[in-house]
Image (cartoon, rainbow, N blue to C red; front, side, top):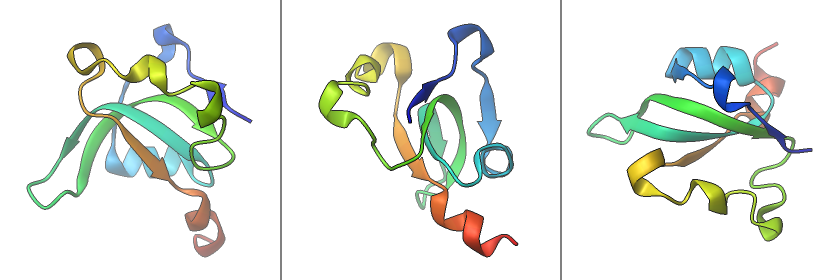
Length: 86
């Protein structure tokens, strides 16, 4: 199931906060910042899903295809970490 995060509730998360908050989910991030070696620094979570790119065929992610408004976007799959975090 895809869950949109309301615009008023969106905020920047550090890499550690993303893992802590969205563990076990696929999270789609906008305005992402990476290290020079492509390590995730931070991003703004705009939706979560139970599967990676769930409902992509419905155009769910197309609305974030505006580089001026959303910057770099990134799908971060944290589903596998749920199993190893216990």
